[in-house]
Length: 138
Image 1 (spheres, rainbow, N blue to C red):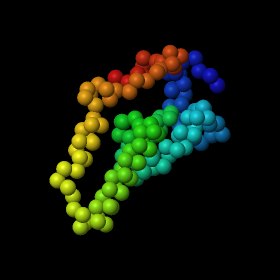
Image 2: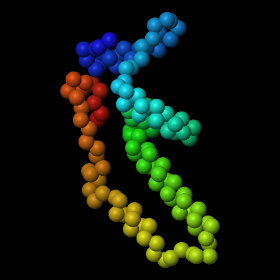
Image 3: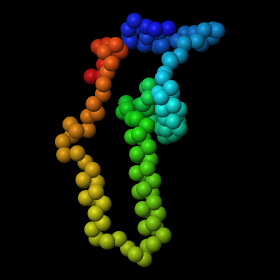
Image 4: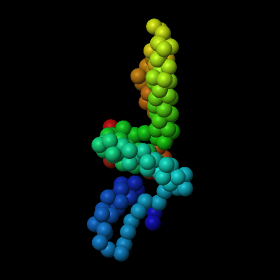
C-alpha cells in the first residue's frame, strides 16, 4: 500500500495495535539496507533496555532516551570502550611500570572536541515527498 502523505502513513501504523486479535496485520516495509541495519541494531537495543534506558528503533537508527544514534556511531563507541578497557587492563597487568605524570590522554580528548558546538549538528537530507511539518523535530 502506498500512502498519499507521511502523516496518514504514521496514523495507520500508530493504529495497528487495534488489530492485534485479528487475522490482519500492518507492518512497515523497509528497504533491504534499512532492514539489515535494523537487524544489526537489535543487540544494542536489548542492551540499552537491559540497562534501564527507554530505547526503540526508528527506521535505521536507535533512539536511546531521546538521542538518535546510527549503527556507525554505536560501533565506534563500542570500539573506543574496548580500547579504553584494554589500556586499563594493561595498566593492571604491568603495575611496576607506573604511570607517567603527563600521559597525554587529556590532550587527545581535547583534540577530539570540536571548537564550535554547532559543528556537532548532523546534516540530514529529508525527501520532500516524506516531509510533513506536523512531525518535524523542534
